[in-house]
Length: 298
Image (tube, rainbow, N blue to C red; front, top):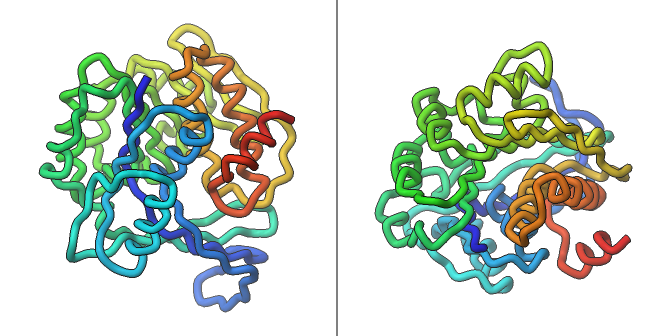
């Protein structure tokens, strides 16, 4: 099975702080580190570690950030499907507190405005699975992406709205829900959007809109899986948290990877829980292949 990963590759500028600053406050940060990130890039990296066939559809612009990203994609053997002049790629300031929790400040670049001429060259019918991040439908270009996704025939759409779920225009979100995507989100995102008083209520509220399977991550408590009939909680393993950057991306990337290998959803989520536990144990969002394989063998 072949997967198309649509979204962004950006620079992650990671800073360790004691706590996220309040308005008007000055703080010191430690261990600055700059890496390639972005939801789509993180998902694709997990698919690559699992040896799954996939294409990474991320716009590459022109400028300092774009040059760093292009160099990394070429190093990893990814074809540059979309190249655009005139605007750089974006970046994300990632502040990681003493508990490993991350706070993001994202500056969007060329990846924030998808254009129809970019997507026309992508043979959508060749893919069994399509991944979409919420950031790409949170502003300019959203209608172009959603209209294009309406051409999917027979494949599965995996949609991870992320922390911007409440910032996506309701018309866009409802249009996506009508495509019956498999949703992947965390507990906070679910409850923020549905305003439900419990996980079960929130899951059922969203299921009414999508009529499809749903995965909700619960951090150290693993994840829950809803298949339209029963709610199943799948525990995680204990993790030594360094930072939580990319945990959700690696989780859905692993689900896409394992299910594409013919593994059932419950076991795929169990494996994804282990993948995410490994990612939170390192700085940044990406495990190199050797490190990944060693972790999964333990």
